[in-house]
Length: 512
Ligand code: FAD
Ligand code: SF4
Image 1 (cartoon, helix red, strand yellow):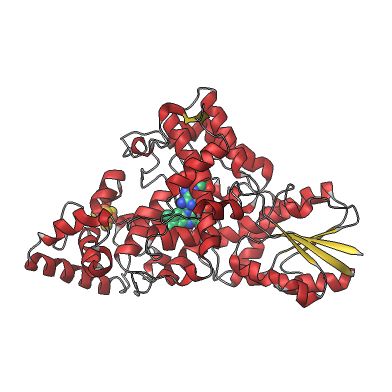
Image 2 (cartoon, rainbow, N blue to C red):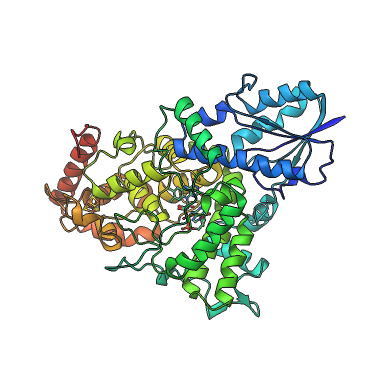
């Protein structure tokens, strides 16, 4: 009797439920499969990251367990899919039972559910305990609620896990310091260099393989400096606490053209593939506060993202799938312009955010939300295409976390499950929070005319286009009251500018 313990590429942790009670003769199996790398054409750097993390985790596994089998992507007998790989190993080793931890994505989970009848052996699917809030607990939280606002979920999690609490009350007397977390970048702001690891021979081998096998995929492989082991991921956490955390809160929303990482932690890669656990990050950051090294607005800001947003987003994903993927409340239909892949656009904020994405397989939250996301919303881009782009280009993107952020937070495609109103903003937001406009051919101060920032007229055009669906939203009362004061000619001008822009965005520029 051979028990097969199957580990997916985003489950790289020795505490994984799959490995609980693992006997010495059990077989642990990991495989690099082409289907997963190509079902959408992931960024090259993301593939290097995931495969290198897997190969480093293999070394760790071999230190702890006797019987570990690993299939490399280019092995001649690698069948290219999880299902076929499992079948091959079952036959090869006479496997009589499979144990695994539930996959994080709906599509893979659905496939795994068939394995028992397909292979005719028991398949034990264990709950993924790497999240703080279980699916069951999330369902309890939503019970009887009309609105599923993150803030209230977050407060319950703070109480339940006793994070930043004293005598049953939030430390500092308030739950949320968001108002102190919106400082624009001031001149001469000193940004720390992000944590960087020198690549080893394993990563170099993976780079060659990715260059050869996935040459047509988007994105740059070099420079590659992300951590690929748990030890280095832990050092990355330490580095963030030491150098980034103190100003993380105040400048959370700030953007600078030559600073792609600002004070952000860059921990999402490691959290999402299992190298770090959310609770250990939260506790380490909380300790830094108790040790008196960092202000409350930074600590609370970080903890809200991990304990609040990350857990909430995962809960929403499992609550709403599979329908969530097809939600398109605003019936947005425009296709994604080509410049999302080339960065060949005259809108400087988009150009920089896409260039950062191409180089690093990373853009920080405000670039994703208020530049790229805001543009996608205002331009009425098709949610399927926008989701696919976000899923492809970021090294931390897995459907469970990408989809609710894009369809819920950015595109309002879910009609208000995640956000109470669309996060639409004009050029003045980007002007206030960044230096992108300084080098742009458009002016954020101009509303109409050749020089006018396209975000300005797209903003009003968006509310005109979606009047039927949005004008009754109580949080948009002010917007529609202002809009009603625009005379017909002004409304016509806005729509005319917007229509011309929305046609021109598909024309290729010579060079920018
Ligand atoms: P920090 O700013 O340092 O934040 C700390 C941690 O908080 C992050 O590492 C992350 O784990 C968590 N976090 C913060 N915000 C969110 C959020 N909204 N949802 C989930 N976790 C959050 N995050 C992903 O991990 N994968 C994605 O594919 C992804 N796609 C996104 C798409 C859009 C349109 C938007 C608006 C956000 C998306 N996010 C995604 C959330 C967030 O932008 C990233 O987690 C963050 O930019 C990662 O960088 P960081 O680790 O430096 O984050
Ligand atoms: Fe972006 Fe408008 Fe500023 Fe140009 S002027 S960088 S398009 S916000």
